[in-house]
Image 1 (cartoon, rainbow, N blue to C red):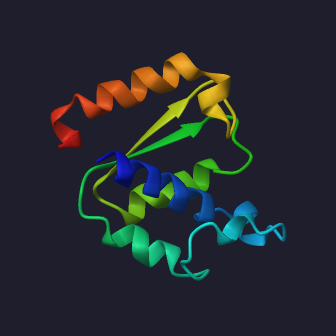
Image 2: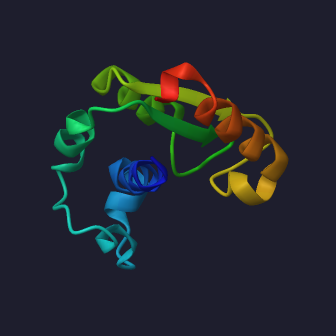
Length: 108
């Protein structure tokens, strides 16, 4: 399950306009060609948690909503007072959200 969570985070990064437009090579971390990320996202067949920092300049609220629309197994949690580096901005909140989700029946 942890692998899927990390994979989902990678897909999130690649599905955002900022990452796709980056010319610094950051969008090449996963060998999924641009445009196929959404197809791959829809193929995930297990419960998936998307955690977004409310002030993220990478994962917009619109893209996060599209992720929910495109993936019926996804659940979104937005952490206030956090940007894209929400694990650094709000580490306790991040651990609490992920811990609660992993312990919930919906994550299984």
